[in-house]
Length: 250
Image (cartoon, rainbow, N blue to C red):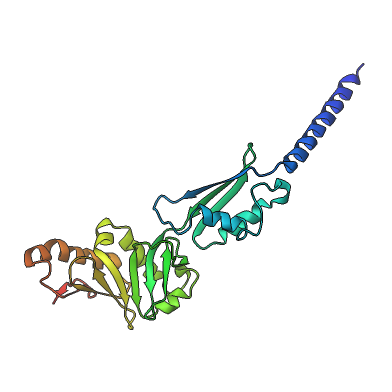
């Protein structure tokens, strides 16, 4: 009698393992009922849509996803396929209990558009990644022009190269509501200096190099908030803030 509980325990464990085994076999035989795609795109950057994601999953419609047995679907491989798209920042794919394949996609956000002299264009994303332009959607962002744009476009990510200071300037402008509305373009000069072009007023802003960004913008704020309202918004063609403690208006 004293061995009976042990025998029952072994029997119960065996039964449980058999049930798990049958459940796994049943799950592997189940087919994908539906692919349910969710794109995190709160900033309305419509570079790719549900159809594009489905095309990535199916390898341009060469592979069947809906109706395929889950045993034949490599979820991690599908996830990597979507993540390989440059517009995608992150993708997660998993199954639900109803036999659906859930695909959650987060898109990269462009913060600047780089335009070469020859007309070639790319975007710089919020994480520094260089993105191709799209025939489907055009994002209204800060424009980067001038020399070295071809070198920027040849990069994978702007943060890891010599243009990290440019990326810092882009972020400074985009993170400030006033400057984001006021500055339309950063033009890179041969001497490694930049000129800023405003959205509304006509003054070219000689900004100098990428040093002392905050100080230069604090002086530029004085120009916009104190000088222009008194002198007239289009009284000057040029304002220079590249020299320390100076605001030179011409």
